[in-house]
Length: 527
Image (cartoon, rainbow, N blue to C red; front, side):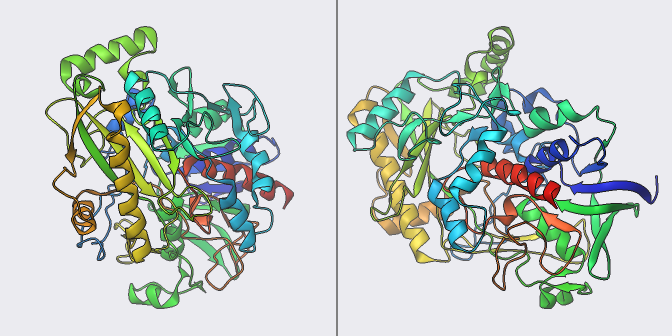
């Protein structure tokens, strides 16, 4: 197929946002929609079993990216998982459904983004959702995305919540409700104890529509531009595809700015430096990168109180059999289904630190695994002041981009991260957890000072896989898209993914990305 005509919309990227847009836009049978995804199928069972998440951080269905050396963290290079599979991040993440704090979206509006306050976006969260507990002021039913309470929890989880209460951190039964503060079980993007990715929830029910074409394992090399309008895309195999109405980028906070720059859209000085002709000088492209850097405490348990033993072949097989027979047990749990939000900075406008309690040790790639059963408590500062970038290494579209989250460039982020780590230690040391927790093994009791903990963090910290902001919406000189998600300065192109967030949300970023896509569909349909 060469030079195919007839599509109204071409969506680049079949991830969390792209699948939503493909489904929503193709609801109108008069609109021809093409969805392009560089990755392949999500048929492998690991994509559907909740505990399969643990395998995903090891590189399954990912681009294989890593960061440039982080100069504020002892030049550490971080493994940087970015999905390369239909459904994108929603197919490989830990399935946590976390919208962020209401004040996050009010901040977007205060920055000049009309239509993006909490009250503006709440209807789109609810539109997407089919909430297991039923509809209320904050939740919806009847939407494509199943949102449910986790299965397969253990007694140590309730002890964790009690430990928080001993420190004055309340129990919270709905962090997506009236208040985000406190510890509790997270809501999950799961249906019938299986992953509910946007591929499954949105795209699969739409695939038989005659006006929707889905192509996998195809990579876009560049956008095609005529004058001041984007007309379509060119694939790596030189195939050209045209869009009569718009091209919509949904390739994420790394992929979307990368494709723009490959196409000659971005900071002119950088494009010139890598040998790309500047067709549209837009300095904000690839800037404003924000991410959550994760620090963790690992403690040894007094017995088999977590799922660590199920990492061994016999026990893993047993867990798999139990899951397929009963939809219960270790494989039914996403392993980080409990946690919550509290304050590193007591003067923060809302909770600024997120916790994830991991039911084992060494769950994620690069994290130490104990010989005996362990438990992990991750902490991450939610509203970093540091800003990084995505840049091209060369003009070759197949070369890995230069990803620089610039962690801890602002000393405030470092201070708050260390405070969050100390709070995680305190929680695991509370009386309520004594029957379950023997002793801290990482960082270890011998590390006491802030300097020692910072050194530990530089050696062991990891990304939370939440990059955002590299094509931010707004009106200032570094904004890339308008609040209607249209690219500044060119017609025929919108961006609808995590890259448009002007500031990062307080929590996991998949749910707000789905919301952005739902709202984008309305904006596109309205013109």
